[in-house]
Image (cartoon, rainbow over all chains, first blue to last red):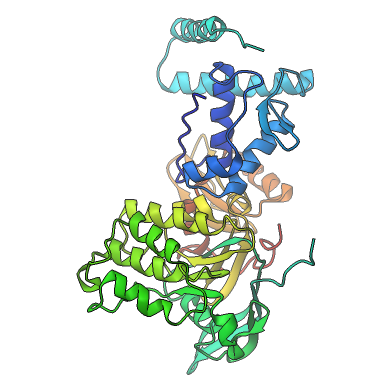
Length: 134
Length: 310
């Protein structure tokens, strides 16, 4: 599995959330395919030198969000894509992210044309990744 | 399943005076078996004293402490052998070699796992023939850790184990701590000033300030209860109001930055009434949160108890 986690403890972002983001990104970029197994909590914790409960927490949150699923006695896997959020919640999350992106872009002095092109390229890159094998 | 094991550590209304100086005041704390507790506080705030009382090296002035279910002042040798204690400063007998240190220590313990000793020694790149007195600080820490871990203690008490270690040795230390707690019955209490290390491995943190317990909660809870608010104004910001839980405030021409603990909707409303153009709530790093919480500025008396629990 091509997952290279990196975490930094001295960040405003809690460690469990850093792990969540990296898994989300890996799934979006299809570096992690649907049905693929994630490392065991204990082994990921030892690789990253962090408390296993922190890894477990990240997995639990992602299971709750429907991105991962736990199969009894076998481990944690990337779930079939399904929507666990209501439409209103989806919209809220996207709006929040769009605001964040636009704020940063304005601060960096990015023009709308550039930003739009960037979003488009990123979107297309994700689409062109090989489809899941399951 | 058997019944839940006794807590590894129970501190019951512990107070300690040196002469007329109060070092620890009415401290209550329970460390359940199987957890990693980070013991935080600035220097001279009572951490080492608390640890020494726990291990029976000093008498409490009032209150009592129990370790592995037994009163600290009457710890039996059998129970003592179940506790690994790494005192501050990584002391070793300089004239012994690494191997001799191991043999010497082993003679005191009924249980001694030479494989663990050698694994830790190797992990810190030590060799059996090296003279303990010639080791670097990080190597000495490795030797001390090996001596502490080889008896396979159920409870590990580490007093500032990372002091003076370079980043590589610190990482090895953290790895060893996580390795120890692979077995769910093992408990660690460690004091540290390196908050990024604490954030990596601790299940919960305990904050002592002036001998008083000021937090006993998860890292996450601690961080989430403390927040920065950045208020932007069109003109000069109004004077900082007397908000409950105010830790720090900082003003610039157009901004008022305040750090608050345990924000309630009521407090948020008070902030909004100041009439800023914008309010941004910013998450803090553990280190920032800690510094705000026990630093010099700000009031000191609110919420001892509220941060306890979950």
